[in-house]
Amino acid sequence: MDFLKNASIKTRLWVIMCATALMILFSGAIGLTGIAMTDNAMEKTYKNSLQPTSKITRIMQLMDENRVLIMLGLQQDPKSPHYKIQNYESSSHTTAIIKNRNEITALINKYKKRKLTSEEQDLANLYIIARTQYVNDALMPAVTALQTADYQKANKILLNKINPYYQAANLQAANLLRKIRETAIKNYEDASERFILIRNTLIYGTLLGILFISISATLLIRSIVRPLNRAVLHFKQIAKGNLDEKISISSQDEIGQVLSELAAMQGKLKVMIGELDRLASTDKLTGAWNRRRFEETVETEIDRLRRYGQRLSLMILDVDHFKKINDDYGHPIGDQVLVDLSNTIRSSLRASDSLTRWGGEEFVILCPNTTASIVSKLAERLRKKIATVNFKEVGCITVSFGVAECGPSETWEQWLHRADEALYLAKSGGRDQVKTIKRPPDFIEKATTK
Image (cartoon, rainbow, N blue to C red; front, top):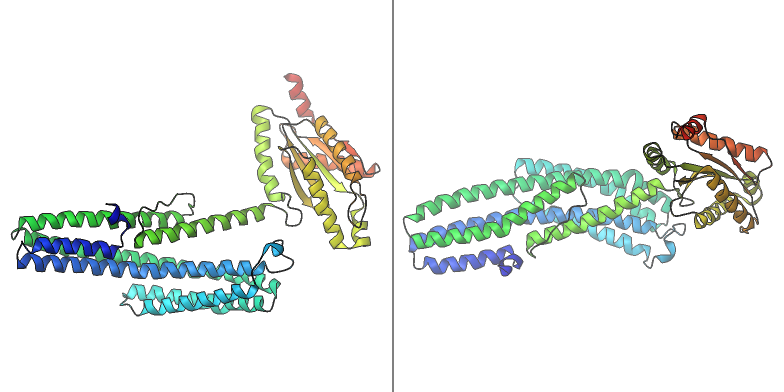
C-alpha cells in the first residue's frame, strides 16, 4: 500500500494494467479487450485532468513568486530597514522575474494547445487579458524601476498596480482552475460510467476477471480520488480565507506535489498577511502601536474594568519644545529623537504596559490593572530617566506627563481627554513634570459604595 501511495499515478496505472493483463490471459479475448479499453480511458482521463491543473497551479505560483521578488528588490533600497542584511544583487531579482514571466508565457501557450471547452476558452481568455495587463502595466514597469534604482516608483507601482492587478489575474486563474477541476470531475464521472458498462458486460464472460478488476478499481479510486477530494477541500478553505488548516500530504504522486505546492503557498500567504497586519497596527517610525491598535486594545481593557472592577490608568506624554528641535536640527534629527525616546520608554515599561504613538511627539502609555497613583510614580521615574539620556546631536530633553484613571462609566475618549487636560496642566505649569487629573465623580461614588 505504501508503494501505491508514493508511486506516480501513471506508475500505479501501469502496475494495475499489467496485473490485470495476466488475469485476462485466463479470462479470454473479450475480457482482455474490454478491460484494456477501460484502463486506457481511465488513464487518459487522469492525465488530461492533472496536466492542466499542474500548469495553472505552476502559473499561479510563479505569479506570486514574481510579486515576492519585487518586494525583495525593494529591500535593496538603502533606505529600507532590511538593506544591510540583503546579500543579493538587485539584478538577480529582476532576472528571476523575467525568467518566470517567460516560463508563464510558455505554460500558457502549452495550455492553449489543448482541446478546450467553450467555457474553458472564455475563462482562459479572461485570464490572459488580466495577466497581460498585470505584466505590461505593473510588473515590467516595476522591473524597470528596480533596474534604474527608482525604489520609490517601484514601491508605488507595487501598491497601486501590482497588488490589485495580481489579485485580478489570480482570481481569473482560480476561476479557470476551478473550471478545469469541474471538467475533470465530469470526465471522471463519464469514464466511470463507461467502466461500469463494460464491467457489467464482462460479468457474464468471467467472474474472476470482474472480481480482480473491481478490486483494482477500488484501490485506484481510493489512492487517487481521496487525495484529490482533500485537495479540493483545501482549495475551498484557502479561498474562504482559512489559512490555519493543516494540509496533510500522504503521498508523493502528482496530487501530493500539488498539495506540497499548496502548503508552501499557504505558508507564504500567512507570513505576508501577518506582516501586513503588523505594519497596519504599528507606527512606521518608532515601532510603537498606532491609534488603530490602541483603540482595539483599550475597548477590551475597559470591558475588564466594568466586568471585574480592575483598575485602569494611562499616561500621556509630550516632548517639551520639540518644534524647536526640528527648527534647530532639522526633521531627520527630530525623527531620530522620537525613535530613541520610544526605545528608552519601552525599556522602562512593565510587561503589561503598552506604548502608542498618538501623533507627532505625543505618546500614550496604557497601564492595565493599575491605579493613577502608581502610574504617577511610574511616570515620574520615567521622566527622570529621560532627562538623563543624551540624545544624539540634541543632548538632553525633557518630557511632560499627564495621568488619569478610567472611570467605570467613561468612554475611552472621555478618559483620554482628562489625561490630556492633565498634560496641559503640566505644560502650562512649567513643563518637565507629571500632573494627575482627579478621578471622575462616578468612580469615587462607586468606590465609596463598595
